[in-house]
Structures are given as structure tokens and as C-alpha cells.
Length: 149
Image (cartoon, rainbow, N blue to C red; front, side, top):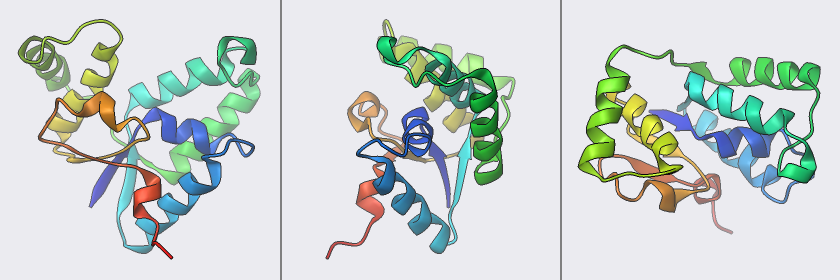
């Protein structure tokens, strides 16, 4: 099965000191063990670059451009990159109108539009509530993939 990784997954992977880092890596390992594939879209890479290069005092990671480039190479090696397709814009427009999406939520709606166009139904994210209006996708947190003890 193909899982799209939300940008917050990529960010947690890049921050070893973050409390969600280990859980993120463990969840991704479970997916790989099951034979599932993680993927990203160009928007995820762009959002990652934004946060990674933003100073920590402005809620960023404070990475240099060289550090960010290295992390993006790592992401590209770990995940299948699903490129943008012409139908994404039309699908995004349909979704924002149908769901009365406003403000910052338009970015998450574009992720769903790309998922719809590429027929990806699974989204790996820590922000499940941001996607609850979209009932055709399944959101799952990396911690939900880990076996309970």
C-alpha cells in the first residue's frame, strides 16, 4: 500500500531531539516491514525547506541550506517522489469550494487533491484533525502503526 507522508513526518525525522522522532522512525520501519511504500509530493519538499531553513526563534529548524539539501536527499532516498500532475489544480479548486476551505487549510487541501489525483488513500500525519473533512482518505499517525505491548 502507498502512504503519503505529511510534511510533519519529514520534519520529525530530521529532528533527533524531538519527542516524536523515535516514534516517527519506528512507524516508518513498520510500514517498510509490511512491504508498504512511503511517498512524498513536491509540496512536502517545499514545505520542509521552508521550515528547515527558518530560524528556530520563528518555529523553524534553523538548518543551513547545505543541511537542508542533505535532508532532502535523504527524504528522496527514503520515499518515492510522486510528481505533480496537471489535474491537481482542478481537484484542489473543487475541494476548496466543496468544503468551504479558507486560510492556511488550503495547503492541506492541496495535499488531498494530489492524493486524489494519484489515487493515494493513506496519509501518514500527526495532524489528523486537519484532514477530517476529507472522508475519502485515511489518516494514520506513526504511533498507531507500532505494536502495543
